[in-house]
Amino acid sequence: MKVRACWSALENRVEQVLVTLRTQTIEAQRLRESLNSSQERLERLYEEYRAKGAAALESKGMSDAMNHRQFMSQLLNLRERVEQDIEKSTVHLERLAYLTQKAEADRLKMKTLAENDRLAVQKHWNKREQRSMDELGVMQFNRASAP
Image (cartoon, rainbow, N blue to C red; front, side):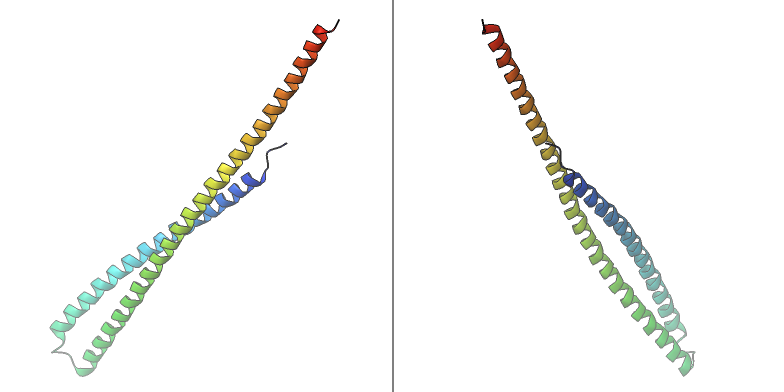
């Protein structure tokens, strides 16, 4: 009886999945950080233009006021898109965390199964060795007691 290689192979496969998930998690975290910094920049930009527009709106012409309003609207749309992307990124990170946790549980399961298999094989060989030693002892006893 030999130790089955399937459990260690499955454990290695789960390890590869874990490495991939961890890499994807790091990339998703970087993306979310980038989106957060973009959101902060957009907020500052919007506030600056809103403050500038309020001060200079009366002195500008009609076309300047329309351009200013259109630009402010574009900034608001962009801010909404960034917020949606941050939300998607958060959901993606939560999904990756769930998958990582599940893969880690699977890895522990495979590791436990491999260990149990190894112990069962060891137990089998110990029993076989003990049986062999018992047979040898009986044979020696029979030889010693034979006339």
